[in-house]
Image (cartoon, rainbow, N blue to C red; front, side, top):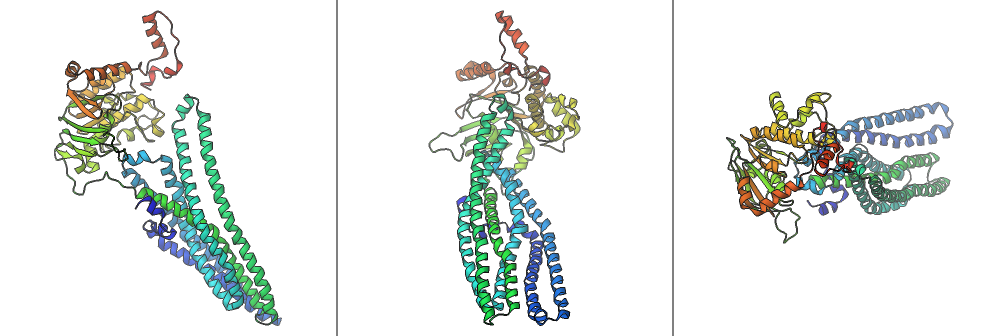
Length: 627
């Protein structure tokens, strides 16, 4: 179902889609409705007792007959209070279970949706759907749904009671209530649009906050805090304006909800006095009428906020199902194949790739790649920026699917493997090392939780990540959000250790050493040679030193492999390869762990001068291990 189709659904149809998540909790919600319904009927019964009291003992002046109606009224009041308590007790926990069930389903869906989906969706929008929207849905099921049903039934029953007391007064109440229903229809059409805009703007605001928090170091480093604040204030002002528009819409319906009942009371009072004067209604009947009308006043007045709450819930439901109905094309096959004896042979056959929303006429990002990597062989991918190196690594692990052609592991198309099976055979380390708010141990063993302690130590040793043993709690130290408590080089080494610990048959490395200093890189490369001796590896190389790890090199140019061979052979035969390698050498910065004093000494040796050091280039000491 498309997003446009979802928005054309009626409010009832849109909310009805939530039933599968609410079904297990509905018996408790129905029990809450029953308790609330009984409380409402009890409240409607009290005016009838008052009528018998006024027309009986009070009119006759018999004080001995007063006590029974008084006791009945008291008993009914206590019963009403008990029913209200039971209503709240019945719906409290089921509402939270509905919210938890929906949140788990949403999180599971987000985990299974392809990377292309997350490329398009701001994280703040997803966060607002998972938190505020689901919280709103929970409150509607526990409170709004129950009261809507109970209050509508109470109004209908109350109307019947009013007509039974006196049909003229009952008709007055009904006719004068019609403007409320008309304005309620108008309000729904107007408020639903505003509510949707408000929730979307709130999601955008959450995205702005998240981006600022994650990028706080950049904002501080460039002194852009005030500009970020101005941008945030502008977005917050949009939300404020929309919320004011919502408040005005709600205030409009509240005007009618307060004005109409008062008008009904005034007209009914005049008519009631006149009817009593001509003997068409007793004083007790008049008392019962106004007591019943007073009981109905709350259900009538509640229509406004219950309607706005329902429309907010409808919008929250639309936003929830926009994610849940998002198409996931990267799924497990119906009849999956398995790799019986993993060897690690990786083959690209006429692979093409372009993004789904790419404009017609543009060339494919990957434009017909044919490449074979034998078991145990290490292949380096080299090319200028934009040639497609990182895209190839993403295709290998099915973060994206090829547009045409195929990628095979040990003769099996990776699309014929389950995602779980594929990612047991392939592991990847990204240039942008992402860690989670968990212990070092959990981060490294993310891809293979069942690994032994020896496997963990070996992976850390290969990645030259022995610094973890010096952390406050060693391997059990929590690294904090995104691992920002560690330096860049430390994060990258842990990410490399995570890939090594998975012990895959194919290891995909997207420039995993870019944040390491020269000495640490040399140690890691030396250790990797032992690992790569028995593992097929595909390495994106941005440094000439990384190329030295490879048995062969594939040269990429505009999404195509234009040359494959040994490093020395390509240097001798390919002019473009020589240009790429020379550009990589030119781009090599000073070691990230080099201090300002080291740079000063080096420059002084060559020039005999004392240079002016830019302090922004040397913010870390050598002891940080590649910050």
